[in-house]
Length: 86
Image 1 (cartoon, helix red, strand yellow):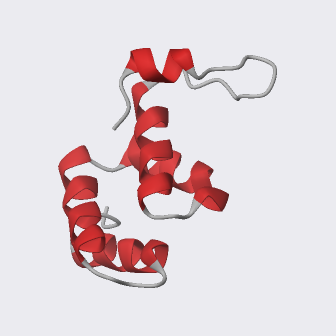
Image 2: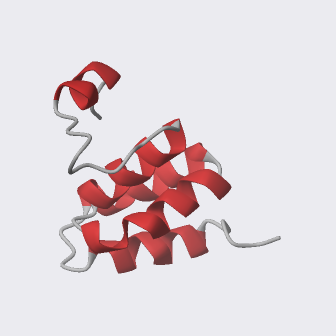
Image 3: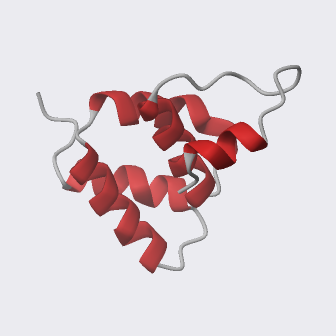
């Protein structure tokens, strides 16, 4: 995961969107690791609402696999972990 210093070095205010919260940074990190940048907003919302240990456990499961659709596998694993139960 990138440090704040690395993010600020590469930040271009004319082209880049602002990331002002830590959960936003983690959501972007999730989308990059899962190779699913088109759904950044989904991962940012998940990072905001689901506890971090659950997200990290699902991410470790997906990264260790060699799946083609990592985003789908990640969502399946979150469901298996009970992340969407109220």
